[in-house]
Image (tube, rainbow, N blue to C red; front, side, top):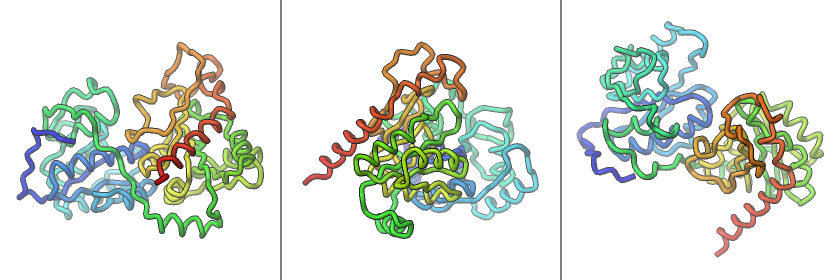
Length: 352
């Protein structure tokens, strides 16, 4: 990014705190905000508030000094825990806090900590909690624009392109993980069948797994504990050579995506992780728009139905019309064929 309106003060070395959205994909996209801040203020350390779930991501984000753990409950205020978090933030001497969510609750701890500059968009009557207001959020087209604009000076135009999120996973760490799990050294396809919202889930992963195994690939199913039942269904359809690697630790998913030759994913956090790592990633989209929700890094392939549907994209979590045709009309054979094309393209790009 090159923005002539940014004039960093080299004498300002006060650390900056980012309060991001805590969904996995949104947290990954928040790394773009880190990169914008590091370019604007290269002498100011950047820390990120995180949950236990997202904490492993911080270890692989270049430019982040530290993740500050804050497992605040979603459904209640928990003022005692907010005060404890504020006390920790106060000790760290932050000069600026960027509060990306528009919620009242997200701004409480930075305000109680007395962070001098608390930047955020107008929302939920946060008067006194946010003291550097930004306006015009609704006019910004994409989620990434709404987040990263807060890292620019007030009134600065958006750049033609934002810096892409990055996750840097050492090859040695990925290799050790693969060896520890007995996964061999063959080409592996990682499948991410989960997502927030039932309508975003493509239902033919089991059939695709069987076709990929028949073509000689290893197949791994990646996800959290909520995807365990899905993984077992895929293993039952795909056969014993399909490995269920779902579990509680997100680091397991990060290392799996870093080790895979190709990742095939619904519109989900794991799609963003794979793309930020640089693994060739196929995103399967039905009710959501790739323009709005695909990784900023770009996808090796965007998979959508060729059927013309007036309701697409609907952005709904549950299909209310057309019997989920935006996903049902995407065949396993077409996805596997696309995966082979992606693998071939990746092999050509690595050739000397």
